[in-house]
Length: 72
Length: 136
View 1 (cartoon, rainbow over the protein chains, first blue to last red):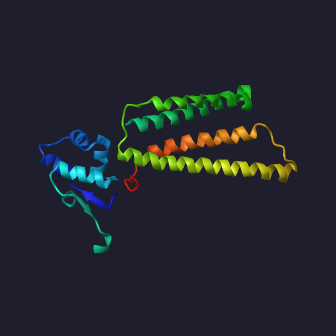
View 2 (view 1 turned 90 degrees about the horizontal axis):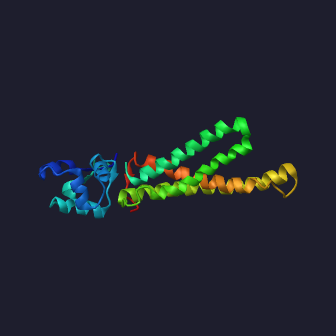
View 3 (view 1 turned 90 degrees about the vertical axis):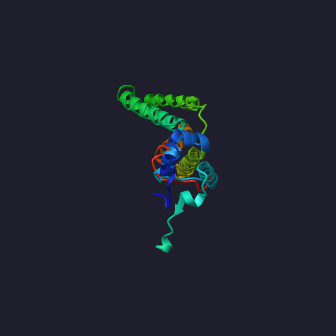
């Protein structure tokens, strides 16, 4: 699993229960990629992370959190 | 399942059919004649027509890039090991510089098959594993 966690799934539901397909279409990737991001199996590029953040009108760090091992 | 996965499965299935056909024919027509079964690898050329309208996204490209790198590494290993082994075997065991006409096409063919097969398997595995967008 990735050391970068995210709350994309929760935000989709908070935004009128947006479907994975709809989010995928808005940010220009496939639904499979959204599923992989939500499950932590894929860490998106910075560009994609920005597009997802803009879709939800949030900053990147509101959505993606880096689990810093040294701080634990 | 996206287009890349379908293509990878197509390559793996064609490979499996070739191996099964070879194993089925070899006892009846001999191992050398049964090698003709591997001509079915030609169907790999059709893989490019599968889902060609689907546009890959950054995750697909990342997986494909890694799979292609693995396929190239494996095939290059086969080429170099195979070709150097021919020299070794020819001079060490036969003391001459001639080798059978079958040897070089076999090494080249094996290298190409290895590339496509490893790439296909790595693609299928890549979609199951954690993949970073580190190089996109």
